[in-house]
Image 1 (spheres, one colour):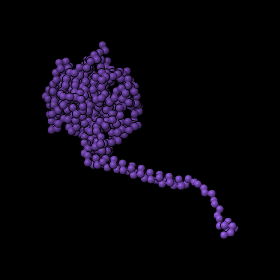
Image 2 (image 1 turned 90 degrees about the vertical axis):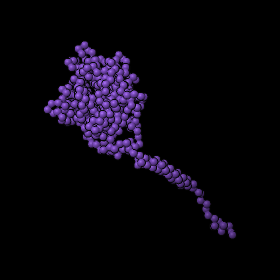
Image 3 (image 1 turned 180 degrees about the vertical axis):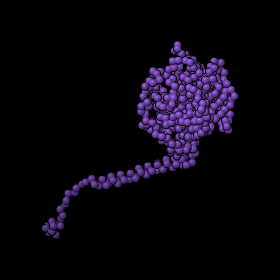
Image 4 (image 1 turned 60 degrees about the horizontal axis):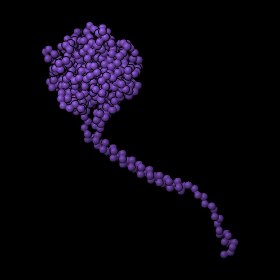
Length: 443
């Protein structure tokens, strides 16, 4: 082959341009593979977690059988409901010495309360002294309560004795000076064919003859109060006990978690807090309306606990938890979603659910007609968390406490003051609180 032919057959060697396309394709291939592995792993984990969860939801029984409830939109926290920090001005009393003081009574300048460990105690000169127990045994956990007892509502009677409602044991009269305990009505006694499983609060006439009290449920006990709230059970009752004839009457039935009770100043009606429904009902015990009932106030800004007289002729109401507006209220949200309630209590304990209840504390004063008069707040529960009760003291001309407003010890006593004594219903909070206000219209 000639040199010319050889040159014609040669092809110019073009320079090879090296790009990252191959690497990109390779990377894409690797990325695609890694993505598939990740998605497969994620799906497998999701299946492994979801299947047991669905199985538990299908197989496990829910402890409650809730019915849908309907609420109005909570009132806006404006005006007299405007959030403030007045409860943070409270002074903690007997801190780390009391466990869950639910209710407070005064005889003179001596204070009494019941605690979560089953005791009725006297609080005087900075000392805590046990004056009564209604049960026995270890009193350390919630499951010990039925044997140990749990004193809730407590009132001073006209003869220097205390009337106490124990959630598990019934109604008692206690002489705090002699340490004498008298059982008035046992929880084991059926009332119109139904047992009392959750004796809660009480209020006593000035002559000490009639005791009006609540049995929050014939199904649920106090230790299962959250199940009672979530189920919305309507088996609570308002009852009357006559200390002379020993007769018991059912005044109102089909209540949803009846809680605090308070006689009017004229003793013509009784107010009863219906906690689950965020309202207070009124039952007339004398006068032209005797035997009748109506709503005293509804759509409260929280779920009401105890009710006590205020110095202005109205009523103080401790809110067990708030219904925020603006904001989110878990109980309002769940009220029309019973399927969510069932699922929650299939998967979580009461203690776990309680961790989602805000520590917001609210005390509301109502007028004698049920209008909102003023409110005291501790938005984070820094000082007074989970307030169950607020009551004012009346003082003698010498300035010494005579008793709680509206009690027999305050009859004929002038100079009532809104010095608040507050209890906390939740056991881990180990104190009572005291708060001095400037007057009944202090804002």
